[in-house]
Length: 358
Ligand code: F6P
Image 1 (spheres, rainbow, N blue to C red):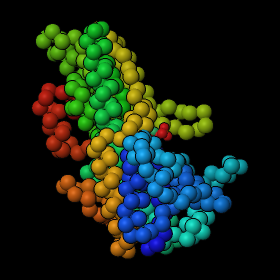
Image 2 (cartoon, rainbow, N blue to C red):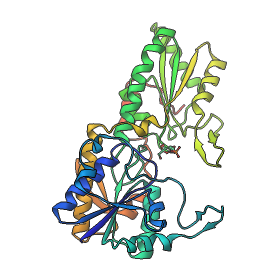
Image 3 (spheres, helix red, strand yellow):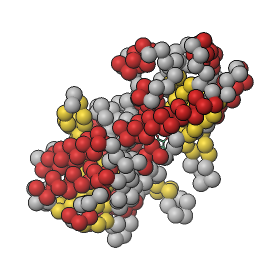
Image 4 (spheres, rainbow, N blue to C red):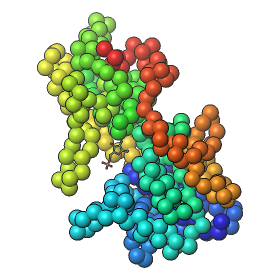
């Protein structure tokens, strides 16, 4: 294994640069060359392939402290059904495989979420690419790993938002609703709600009622507490089971709007004044926390070791305070949502937080 490629794919998050720095340093220990591929799959489609030879200067300094990905990424487009500039769809998988071969790579490290890993596993099978994957996503929904890069930072940013909302909630005696990301999983909302002292946590995995929320807020009034913090995950549905989406002008759809729905319903049915904060991409763009830098560094080392040992189609994972590796299929076939029986749900109940179920 003399020359390896790395790329980031899917939505960005904090800790990607730290992972790439780690990969570079570990690869140098083996005497490998490292090529950074720009913009995920898009770099491999372009001709010449859009890539950059990594060196100590590029990865040194403050890079690993910064959010985002210095290589760029994309969370749009399936190369097996790819929308070209003319608006027509085609299969560009062969082009990507050719791109890998043009770079004369012996192996590839993909830093991505479950969607990216599924795509790259298919590409690796088709083109016989030597690939290993590193899980990253603020949503923390990749199976077979307790943590993915970026999650800890997102929770930290959202917790700080609750810290800030607390003061203004108390000043105005309001219910402040914080809508957080997480796609179809409630990990960010659950962890943030506990860390940030929320009174209500709503996650897509557990049903709730507006009456249940109001009951909780009225109980607090009996203790002379007239303000509250509510955290809601973006994929929580309305009481009628409807999903709120934002439709962008370019045709893309993203989850969003449930916070406003809750505010409207609570204000219609009670005398509680609500305001809504949608945290959005600040959860993704922040500087990585110490935890994310550590996780990214450990993952990067292990990923290079796997390539060096000729172990392909593996994903590095965090289990029981150790870095291990699992078959990529095992990870992508188990989308990890909040388990009703997991300890943190019990913690929320035990703290008297309204987390739904009635
Ligand atoms: O998967 C990461 C994520 O940030 C989700 O939590 C969110 O729903 C989505 O990406 C937002 O995507 P985009 O960056 O395309 O708006």
